[in-house]
Image 1 (tube, rainbow, N blue to C red):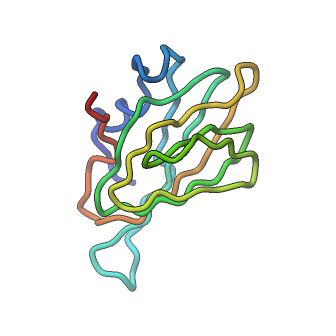
Image 2: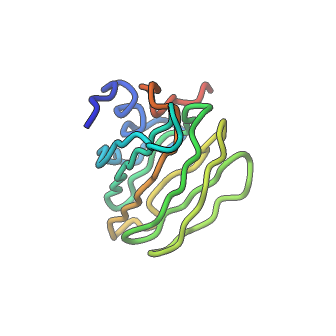
Length: 135
């Protein structure tokens, strides 16, 4: 597995004024594989774990990244590119198109944990997975 910039992953796992001082999420890269029939592209899986009331600050991902996220546990509140926030439950999924702005990413519950698996398809040489949004 590749070692990613600690700054990039820490950015997703920190809180901000946007996240209303919510507790941080835990972010773990669980796989990273080049796609053999698409030269220059890789697939990376990122497990995001939210404790009760946890959330991530507003952020973007690499402009080459297409992301498919599936809720594995609990419920996740998400809003992308100015769309209204929506709550996704276990087994439900959402996508982020390349260049999207992920404005809301949080556990929808203040009493139960939540988890999602985000699968990135992006340029193999991309190092930064998360960039905090400028306020």
